[in-house]
Amino acid sequence: MSTGTTTPHEPPCRIRALHTADTVTVYQAYAPSLGLPAARDGRFPATWKRDRMTWIKPSFLWMMYRCGWATKADQETVLAIEITREGFDRALRRACLSHYVPGLHADRDAWQRALRHSPARVQWDPERDLRLKPLGHRSLQLGLSGEMARAYADEWTVAIRDVTPLARKIHALVRAGDDRSARALLPDERPYPAPEEALAHLR
Image (cartoon, rainbow, N blue to C red; front, side, top):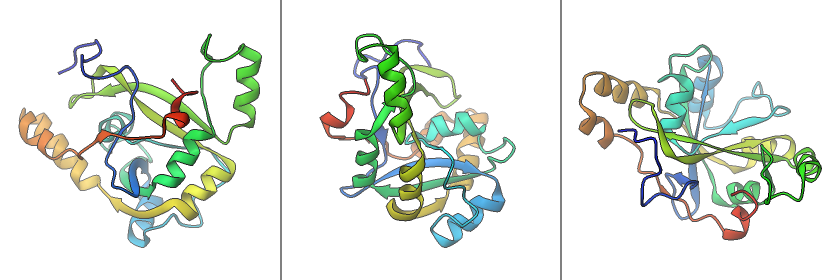
């Protein structure tokens, strides 16, 4: 249940993700016309816009909040995209926070210069519970543009799965009040061991 405060064992900002020794899973939601071919072929189709910023989310429940359990227009197909940890960590190293933080940035102008020249950006958004209420700790959103977006689509992607049926099943259990069964189906998102130097400028 949402408490509105940071859970004692959770730091204010942390990357939590389903990951292996070599890969990390992130989530995106698309219209079926793009999402279904991507899942079928295991790669993003040519129609995927590689010249635009794309946001990836390691948190399944935050993705459910964003897409309304796969009910929002053009977000009816939820994809689990398994990418290389090497690529993910590279994006973190080259990312800039999407907002200015006094003390972390020398001044607002320095932050704006970094933002303009960075191919990736980071937002820390409140994590969500099963009812999509905000929790007191935050999870990562990673925006990729330019070279990073192209690398994500064409180099880092290892596998793409359509997890829309899973989203609908969990949602049905939540609506039925069976939180225990719903929680048991959630991806096993654990703290992600990002290199410390990759995060030092992002917290």
